[in-house]
Length: 333
Ligand code: ATP
Ligand code: LTN
Image (tube, rainbow, N blue to C red; front, side, top):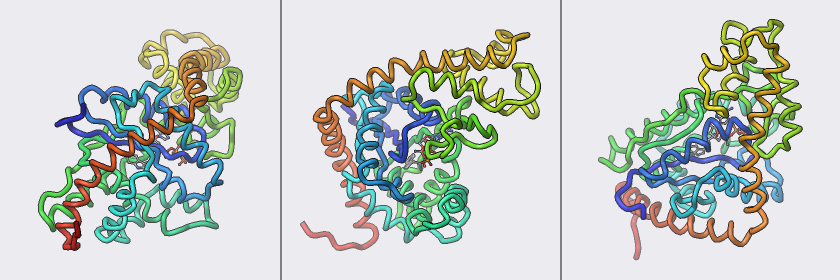
């Protein structure tokens, strides 16, 4: 099924209920690669524990994230869908790559700085070395392409640097991956603070629209979205809030920014916000219905996890043998 295809890899943390930022910036774009590439989409639960998680919640969100992948259109027959902790090679390669990653490089990562500021009482070593584990996720499968939101660009560049460094020392071992960052929806902003990224772990529920939010909540959140004191639906200086709503509306309706400006010329913010809310809720309704159906069948989700883990473990074992041999680790049969 996947033979000789180039590899796409991406991951989402089961660290909260997924937002329309995760959907538009990442998951929605995953579908586009399924025909041409061998795609691996991972629920990265080992990344999620860099921030303290409640065990029952983490378990539940792991099923939910997998079900959401499928509800967003990813067919487990055409993609390898799996959970990170089912493939021990991620942690193993993560450790090895830690030894080829510099303290200074990790210190420059902006996500580390942001998350340490938010979790000042738990700045653990895993939070610091998170990008090396992410590099391991990617390099383990000889990945060519990584679809992510723009917030992951710096981590991706580090993964490339680590691959090149390792290849430079030991000869060709890893494919050096490229990022795919969607042009229009690379960074969906918070509805409460439109200069900040919409993030699933945001404490302010009004700042985020979740894929699974009920229709009335979606419409209410967009109605409350922070904008500016003007009244024109257009892009421009100081119009971050409106511009963000335009990007969201554009992504769900397929319209360009110019078309949106024309469509809403002369109309007020209230009408526009209602249109954004309704369009978003309409687009998410079928995803929600499919999610509900999938979540009723845990046994099926576990079969998908198991099959995905088998495929991923097989691919990972090939890279790991190569890596161990190159480094000088003794292998026993
Ligand atoms: P957390 O709040 O726990 O850090 P997150 O919402 O940032 O989570 P991740 O699981 O870290 O989500 O990211 C999954 C994918 O979604 C990544 O590819 C990331 O780039 C993308 N993504 C996350 N938030 C946004 C956003 N606001 N706009 C576009 N893409 C996003
Ligand atoms: N670091 C990412 C999630 C992630 C990922 C990956 C994305 C972990 N491993 C590998 C792409 C490829 C995040 O925080 N959004």
